[in-house]
Amino acid sequence: MSRNQSKTKEPKVEFLLTFIGTVAAIMASFFSWLGYVISKRAEERARPCIGETLWTERSDSYFVTLKIFPGQYFVQTKSIEVAGAKLSYARDVSGNGRLLSSGEEVSCLPYTVSVPVNRDIVELKVCITPKLKVPFEIKVNLAGDHKPLVYHVYENPFTSRTPADKV
Image (cartoon, rainbow, N blue to C red; front, side, top):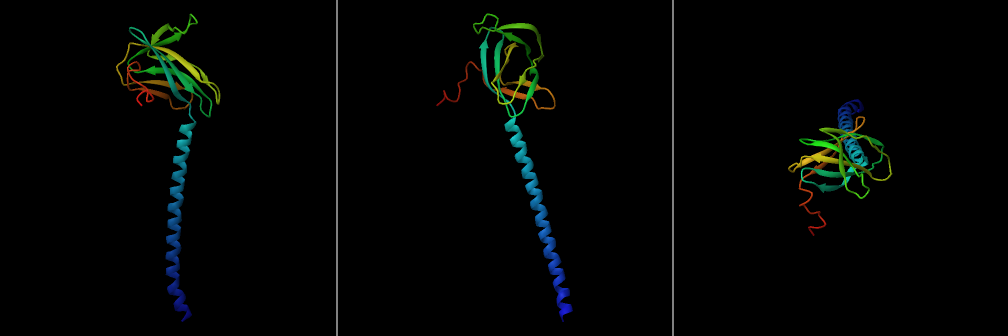
């Protein structure tokens, strides 16, 4: 009798172990995926970002100062692009903060600046010609295999108000 009882218990135990193994495999897959998602979000938060912009309007162009806030790893800018516009360097030649356009206007402006870790804000000054209708985006390409920094302009910077002004 003990042989018959052990034969009937073996399939139940085998089924139970198979079920537990399947559940454990599903849980391992879920936690692996969750770890991947969390690491990707942490990587995005560690990236530098364009946190602030200063705009000056002229009759046919915008002078823009992009302020890049450093992240948790070193990057270097490579170029700046604005679809549908020409870019040139903006320089403060007088020392009073008045920017002037210098150099040839190009569609992809080479602009190489190091953005170190945990340092001061890095400023990029460009002239955008002609004035574009919103929405448009300013794309700062980074060296290496880093994704570009993109600053979206949804409203005219001279007519829109900041969220603090709307309160």
